[in-house]
Length: 174
Image (tube, rainbow, N blue to C red; front, side, top):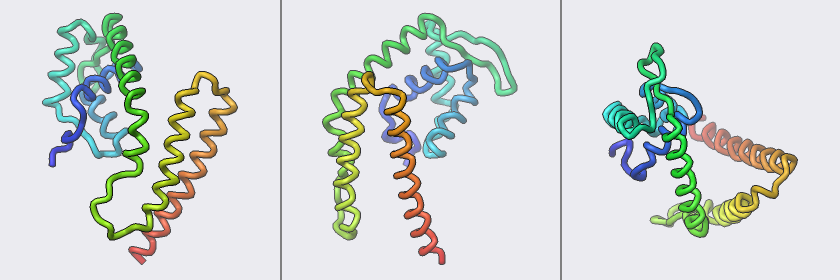
């Protein structure tokens, strides 16, 4: 199976624009950043990155800004920044439409009934996701204190779940 199989069309362009909105990067740096952020699950090929960068440059969205040890770096032009803002707004509209479907995806599709033990926990995960979606829809009303409390709750839960994974991994190898 190809690494990019299942990656929605246009996602790579959006990610490249997002990264370039943060700082100038070369094609190699973009590939590595995507690989790092996906924990190695996706590493776009140079054959997809460089034509994309060339296309963005031809449309006036990027310019070569400098060179470093990884090659030419690209930066967004004002037109590119405006285009990226438009893409963000389109993405937000899409996500708003998808919010109602996220809990269904969280619950997942069961293709075998070999392990029903985790199925009951998925209901709790679904409730968590629904609550997080509700919080996200009210993000403009949240205080910095609220956000810090949310982070603490989620970090604590994540750490506890990781301990379960580690304990079970130890049982498999021990």
